[in-house]
Amino acid sequence: MKLKNRIIACGVFSSCVLTLPVQAATFEVPRSFEIMYVDLEGAREFGNDFKVNIDEGQHQIVVRFNKLVRSGGDTQAYQSQPIVLDLQFEKNDYFTVKAPYISTQKQAESYLKNPTFTLVDDRSGKAVDYQHQILPVKSGFQNTRDYITEIERLTAKSTPTLNDGPAAAPVISTSNVALEMMQFWYNRSDEATRKDMRIWIADDLYKPTVSNIQLEMLQFWFNKADREAKKAFQAWLVE
Picture 1 (cartoon, rainbow, N blue to C red):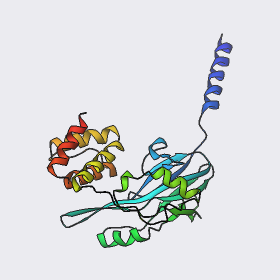
Picture 2: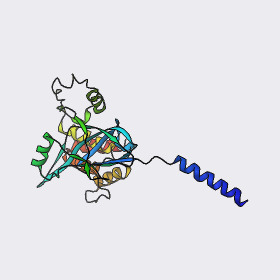
Picture 3: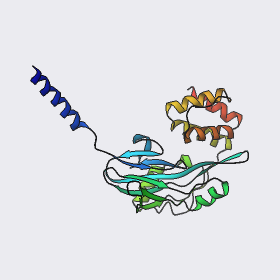
Picture 4: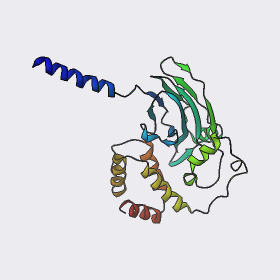
């Protein structure tokens, strides 16, 4: 009987070992950046906005500089164009983006013109060679752009329509921009962040329990919004 139980136990153990996932590689960015896509899928499918675990092999990762900079009583959001990286990962690789520390609006404005960074292999401490492309600048409200389609065209090297000049800026009022930005960042938030945001809106003395770029951007745009945009956002939350 004992022998039979051992055989069963060994069989279960072997089955578990066979179904264990292959050790993933890791890609991480500082909090002044965000990971937008991995192989054209949202970063949250793989981890979160700052660190993703992926299988070894060739991957396309899209990142961008994304930071709130405070100066006196004013807060300004700075966001670069998406940067498309083509990277080869080996088993257990841990690649980290090392970027300059930006603390002033002047530094942020300068950095947006040429967002450079180093990619480091944490295992060896050595810099990793990488190829990258940056989406062209377009005027207008950025988060209404179809980034995935633009990235596909860019990486396929068929971008004549993107090089014909910037698209005409849509007519969007400041209140509408704030509303769309709040909806955008709310949709990118996890449940804990959404809950904290709803409580914070109802009670401005409430201190959120989470700390991430989604909440910071939600608060930033809520404070920028006019009364009508705030009311529209609150109505949208309960729909």
